[in-house]
Image (cartoon, rainbow over all chains, first blue to last red; front, side, top):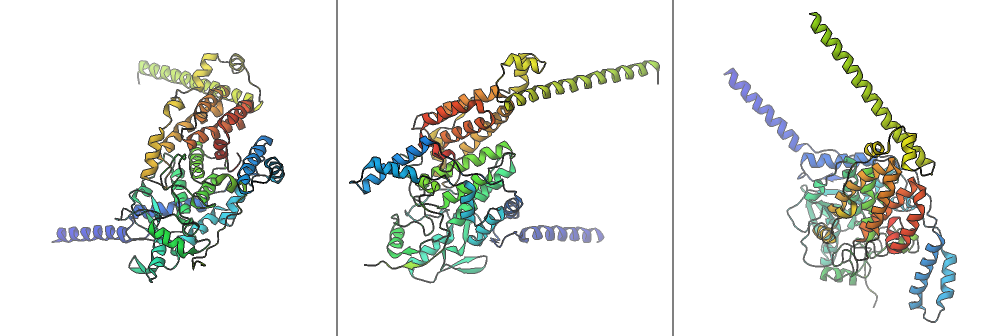
Amino acid sequence: MRARRIHFSFGLLLTALSCGKADEVVKLPVDIELDPGLSHSQQTTIKEDFEWLIDLEMPAADAPAVPTREQRVLWAERQAHLQKFQNPERDEGKMEMELLNTFEQTPAVSRWFEEIFGGSESSDVVNFVDDRINYLEAPNRNPNERLYLATAKMNTYTPAFNRGTELFFTALGAGESLRYSFAGRFLPLDDSRVGLVSLGKSFFQISHPLPAVEHLARMSLLVHEARHSDCTHGIRRSDLKKMIMGIEASDKTCGQVHVVCPEGHDYAGVHACDASPWGAYAVDSVFVTRLAQCEDCPEEYLQAAMIMGIDRRSRVLVRDDMFRGVLGKPDMTHNPKLIEDTP
Amino acid sequence: MTFKRKFLLAMLAIAGFFVVQLAIRSKLRHENVKATIRAQAQSKMVLPIAAMAESAKVDGQELKNVIFVDLPKLVDEMPRDEKILEEVKQSVHSVPSSLMDFTVLVSKKMKQARDNYFYAEALFSEFDSCAAQDDERNITLRAYCLANAKRLVTWYPNLAARWTELAERVGTHVLELVDLGQG
């Protein structure tokens, strides 16, 4: 009898322990709600990513880049050539000289970082993500694992996508007050900053010999997805219709939607480029580049951050003028309004 | 304890002492070599390998043995463009895994280059071959090699002229990717 009781108690203890583990929701250091469908280890991974970023000591601010005379001349030549199409009557040589005089120093990465994240600390990135992501959804059963607006069919496997923004467009197009069921509640979809990000399985499969690289890679994905929550200039009804029909919108800043990379690009034909300035790839690029400006960081970390930064920059089609400041400062405002087209 | 056993223990202790001494000397010599190379790198003056060996009190062959670890050539390990594109198609938002894998090899080489100008010089040629591939090749990969060549110049200013020549050869479209808009 005693032996049976002990056996029974041990069983109860085991059950309690295992249930406790499964039901235990990991508390994040940010105001983001985790899907109960995420396993304990997945929740811990996300928690550790944020803790890593919060504790990260930022490298010293860099100085603006001083271009060489040759670089300035090349830039002026190219700009003058482009402007010639708009003003065919103007003298290209004269324009070139004027442009050469207007050439300013390229702003430092740290300046763009401050413009985007509203400060120079890693906690500013955490706040940036926290403002734009409110819910993290478990790797789901739906194969459409990404923000995808331009074409109807989607069959790629992505580590994360901003489902909230996609559903915001759906709700806006339907003209209905739609809700999304998350952790037993119904989330309103009347704002692209509903902040619902779905994580793919590959988010948790990111692997590198150096744990800091894994943290950096996952956080850069969250920074990228956070930017998709911004609807900078509102959305025109004509653009909304286009997106629902699978056509590229004229103004892509609501949701910072990607475009198909053009002919001649390494990723030509893939929906992996940004045509408007300061979109998700640009923001992501500034984030990883700034975090890699440390001379005493492990070499593996620097190398990984370098390739991440270059890969992201290569996807920004207007990168040259954008980083030079010609296209203006990053507009981080949010205006999720439907704008009626004027006849 | 018998005398024979005591004698054996004593001999073992003496042998152990000499082994430790040898290890310490070898380590010191290794450090000496590294220190000499760092010093010459900081002085921005390249010494011939024989002079370096003389300065470090080791012979030239040993200098090479101490520092160089055989690693595959970068051009042989560069991921194929088709593979990179396939990975982007599969996982649009991620940095292609073959590019990430390539950084592991480059990290190893850069670590060795940091301690050895001669290694850095050879590695610069490898980055040159990678960055100066024709325009059909993946631009991210080429810019990444160019960025690393530029880092070598910050460690060894002697390489500056080679970098300028390389940067001109690869063109602004690759150069502008190296740093934010500095092309």
